[in-house]
Image 1 (cartoon, rainbow, N blue to C red):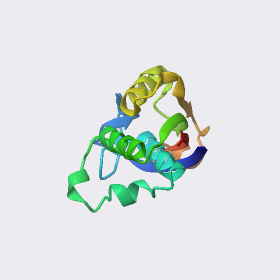
Image 2 (image 1 turned 90 degrees about the vertical axis):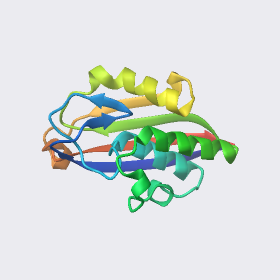
Image 3 (image 1 turned 120 degrees about the vertical axis):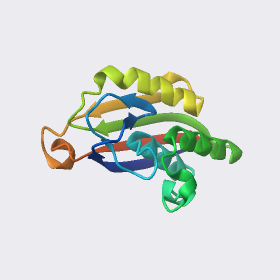
Image 4 (image 1 turned 45 degrees about the vertical axis):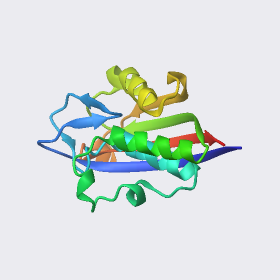
Length: 157
């Protein structure tokens, strides 16, 4: 049986933080604020995977009230979710995702992000789609106040 899940995340852009998207550090003057490394793409993917398997959400598994997740690499969290899915006899079919950011331009980083995500999830790269969109200057992403990400996951059991 194939099951689908959707994920969404958003974080505010701030000074003095690294910009991490899909477990890749992106050169930019601003980074994302959050309890962990604030990787909106991985957080959206985590929620899509957990949703597909009806296993809750990222906040239930990795609460921001727990000090052990302070500044944690979100790739570690994604690997834990993939391990949980395997334990529940799920396998990842594919991930489709979108990063919404006015700046920086993400096209030069997409393939590296796809490779890194595939490596973490232990899937073939053709099972990982990452797209980047701007908001044409509209909304909080368009005015560079934050970055959002959406993801859809398909898993099989």
